[in-house]
Length: 281
Image (cartoon, rainbow, N blue to C red):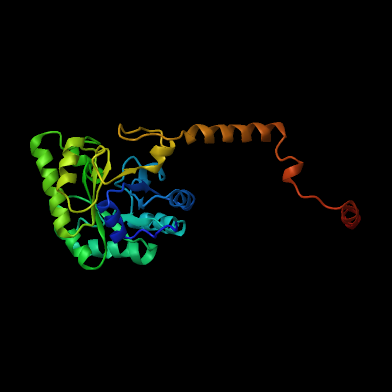
């Protein structure tokens, strides 16, 4: 069966049919190509690129220009998945006008098909303004990494009744503002279930348990490529750090031993041509 190009309406229709949505982060052309080929519905060019790829301690230093650069690379590798650009810190918080402008950059410069931003009730008017320009928005609540200084670190959110109720209010406000989907990060599974049961848009979880329309993982966590820490909710499906480390060590050993490159890695010149060359010297 021919695979459909995923669009916002198709994402919503798939969720409505009760089919699980598959979402991964993506930061470059090679892994975007493989993720798209594997059947992912959504690829998020996340500001987590700052930690996984650029070496920052948090997501806060990531700029719009850095996000656009990586989003362009991802888009070139994607044929079917819906591509979402993640609005980095201070690209949308200062004013609604700037938020709309920067959201537009993702579509105009990087050919993204939607954007994601963090925040609930306090960001509802910003979401509404972006949506009103024709740009689809995914909301993001719970553990919002751009707010780690206020939250006191990468901590689970909504573990008491008051903060859990705020998460339900946030999800409802984002939906009412026009968000086409909401991402829940690092919240208790039963709180996520309450949001899921009340929502009229797809709910995606990352560390929010199974009661969601779909799941997101950071691709470097999934592949074992990020070693600083592994969140409790992240499942490692491969340990590519070990595989790559062995490949580098084997390369080093062969170069030092003089066994690489071998004859199969070289081009040659015919004996008569070599003789002519030597005669010219």
